[in-house]
Image 1 (cartoon, rainbow, N blue to C red):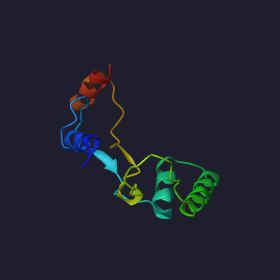
Image 2: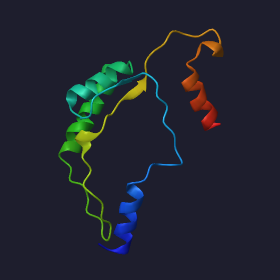
Image 3: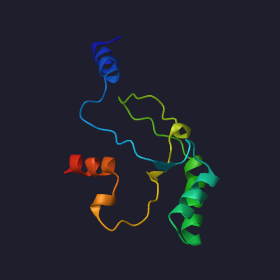
Length: 113
């Protein structure tokens, strides 16, 4: 193992100290990408049919593509089926004031500045 690889291994096992996580209820799709997921995403966004058709055509094209192999760049193969492609806070009623908003969500906005 080279020094650079050992350093990467060391850092990858550490907790990320510069970020944060907000534990709120979310509407999230399970990992994976197929035509059904794309249709569901389009439905959730309230998109017109032509947009769904465009996305499905793009997905079909993407499935036939090969990832380029760049010179002198080494990284693990991306597992596109291990990624969740939709996550959003669960819909809540419209609030009349900030006092009604989930405090955890407000803390996130404070952290973001």
